Length: 302
Image (cartoon, rainbow, N blue to C red; front, top):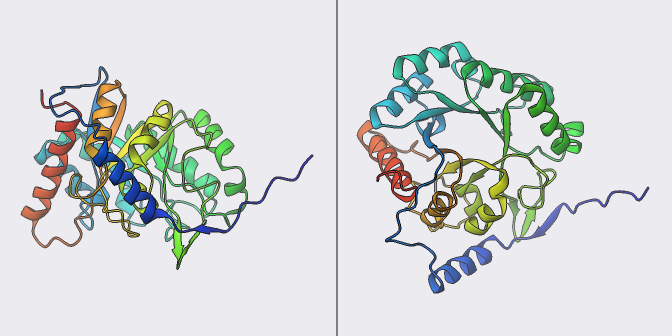
């Protein structure tokens, strides 16, 4: 048997150049239809991520989402025990009338031991937590190359775990780390979802911005497996910005309209950075703007 080709550790840093070319092409050939009124034949729910209100509590996220008119909540699991308690989430859901749409697994670099030290057991416990809380989707990042068997067998293992637990495990697009003029490829099998054999995926606009990914083309290609969207924006810089949608340079409106036009079925979760805000009114305004943006371009206002 031929030895599996080893992936390089770095590649040329081309994110900025790619982002610039994409903006220029979109300016030359606009695809958004301002007079169109597309709406998916399927239900699209718009949720609020707990990361959008950090450092507020899970309870405060549910209350904020209910007050502003969201359809549900995504809980990002952290080392905060409140984010690991499905019974508590269910109580907040009953109190506000908003379901837990999804759970974000603790797969960030700084959370290696949250839930469990073993990565597969961590994922299994996250899926069981999601099921107990009533969520139908778990969002997770691809593994780091140094995470042993978890990284080596990730695609097949995620498929088996989803079948075992009955929960959709939607792998999220990431971005390369930068070291000068090179991109360090730390994720396995890759930070990019394209070309990978996932059954279900999550698309994040801010991550796509940082990577220099053509968001609209990526969503077109990923459409059969696309189950979940993290709604945000970016300026095409090397920073993962998580801007309010419409405040960056990504084709967010065009992509949402594409989903509505092609009868997509899934959840859209607002994941924007409000940590710099000092007032609740400012945060509320950002989250309301994000919600209205989603509704307008998904055709949910009509």
